[in-house]
Length: 310
Image (cartoon, rainbow, N blue to C red):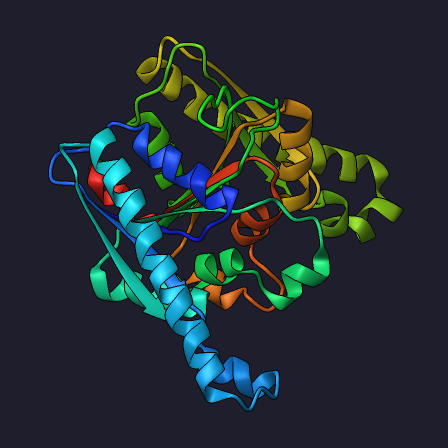
């Protein structure tokens, strides 16, 4: 398995690195610690800084600092994971672009990066590094927060939300949960969201209130039935964990984020098709919105991961 870990000198990156070092990885796992040096040539033009020597010195200074940081973190991770191959690399330019290109070129199967949950729509519209990476990378990704919602250390992920909508990529997310190792105290909530039923039957509701209520009840019952079958399957595979199912009504991302707050979730697991995030990038896919706005950690599972379990 190839795991790419983008790093900078922030506490959020440190949380991601601690997360990596605390896990048990499969045999022959390779971990690449990666950091990006800013493109000072472009920065100088933007800031109208004419002193090329000063810009070059700034770039060289940052490069030295980045190399020292990566070496230090590599040494620490090798001590924590002696059975894993750990290496480092430095990129130059725009962070998100370099991370995505490196993931493609190196053949990364998983990206783990730290980020803080943002509720700022303007920042989301402009595109944070996390949003851009999750939108463009073809592999699965984990977004690590500094603290989980209960205020404990990030790695004590007691409550996990698993999103399900009947698609192949949401089934891949369920498969990932079913085949991962969990502690007995961890609790799981499988969640399906019926997107604004009233919007779909609005005209009918005006003239046929009884029929509209029947259709709504049928939709909820069908969704709950489908979800219950997956709850039972997970209970059979994970008998030591508490697992429940929830059917919500509303807009998917907002409903899941609200439940995460109420449930005090420490992790949200959501599937995403490899092309889905790019296609929906103008308005923001459900997976991308959750990964960017959630205050807890997020695991984005790509549909092709499902083949590993079949």
